[in-house]
Image (cartoon, rainbow, N blue to C red):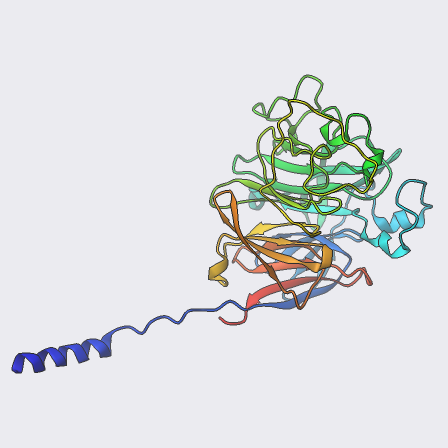
Length: 405
């Protein structure tokens, strides 16, 4: 009997000292506008947790303090920059865009300053990389430069890539950039055509002598790595993958070092792709969507191996600047791919298992915003860049936080 009483006492004491179970945190993503009044923001790079460099498609390269909201334009940007505000002041030439579309569609053109990316050793060398739309004889094209940021000015500007030829129309430039685990710079360049009926006999994205419609791999100084894939003696230098239509976003998966990029289709056909050395992503010979031109018949390329997308949507998403989430605010999102979209203002959370998409969740379906890029801060905070088609000066930096913490 005494043994039973002693056991009961010990059990009760253990109940009193046992730690209480940690409550399970639910995820309730909530938006908070941090900075507004931006002119169609495209990209953002963190100088610190409080300060960022932000590119505007119809404005400037800005240094912004997220706490004080102060915006400082960066001086010294190259004079060959071209954006849609300048384009709208000029007369439209035949064939640049369907005349049946309303004037309001002009502001959706993809021009101006695109990606801003810090050098992996930025704290030591103050170097950054910028992709933008450059004007020249015959139109415009994608250009990449390297520069130093000193006293809020760009200095020591070096051109690294110019995706010739210049051509008409302000769309499908690409412009996404990321550093791979190998220390190389990867750059996406769009094919620059709006309608497939304008394709030459050898489609632009399949023509290795044409710089458009490709993904490049460069050394930080713009030189070409010796271990790049071989696309033949006639190929332009720096090619890493071909068959690209309009890839804007490219990001590095922190756990594996693999590079993933988003791709715009025409009539559906929006994709998430895993970048592969020497890959041919098919455009316009193969597509998961349709063509704008019902009459277009792509050429047959017998024997060509095409790289299939990891995922494609059955509806139009227009995916843009994506990133992997590694923060702590949303435990259930850890290592998920976050993908914003322009169409209907969508934002997607994608769960991967290796190279396979296991699930998708569309976020903020009750509060849609046209979204250009999602970025994670050094401390793991998640930010979204949005734009407003009715008021191009009302773009925002939006923080996404967990209100259930």
